[in-house]
Length: 85
Image: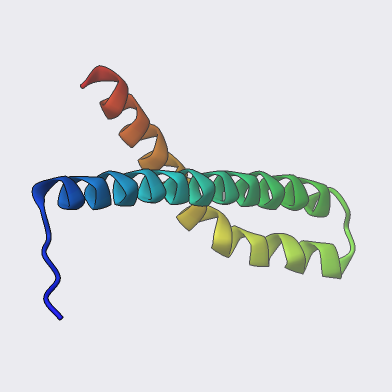
């Protein structure tokens, strides 16, 4: 059985792959930003009290905030580059 691939088939596959990748990128970006907002809000609320558990929780959340801030900066940079370009 021989499968023939035409140029239109390849361009259709490329278009579908691009659309799916863009949708997946948008979903991951939304999840990352929502997680960052959740971490920042929880850290603020936990750092207000003088109890030991909320203070430890605020310290643990600091570990995850920095990478998420870097992801947020990358998302913003890509969106600005896409807008300008």
